[in-house]
Length: 114
Image 1 (cartoon, rainbow, N blue to C red):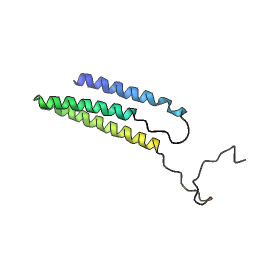
Image 2: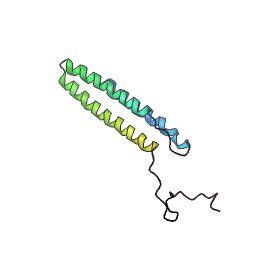
Image 3: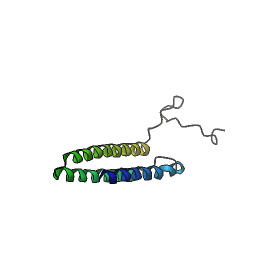
């Protein structure tokens, strides 16, 4: 099972990393949260957990324990992907500008600041 899961995990990581290359051309403003990496990693985690339970119930405790460790690592990757997407979709607000009371500071716009 590990010989199948390891290439699937590598392929999944490669596909999800290549998928994010086109994000530099996105519109300005807060983008919507991208759930695809979270769902793919969560599905992989769920699949590994099912295999772990099958191994544990069929009296293979060491194989089940190894799969539980792999599922824990996959769950950490899924949580990390969710957190990165959450932070990307909800950027921190701009600090208030000391020269303009109460308004957020924005980078200078060369078109309007002439």
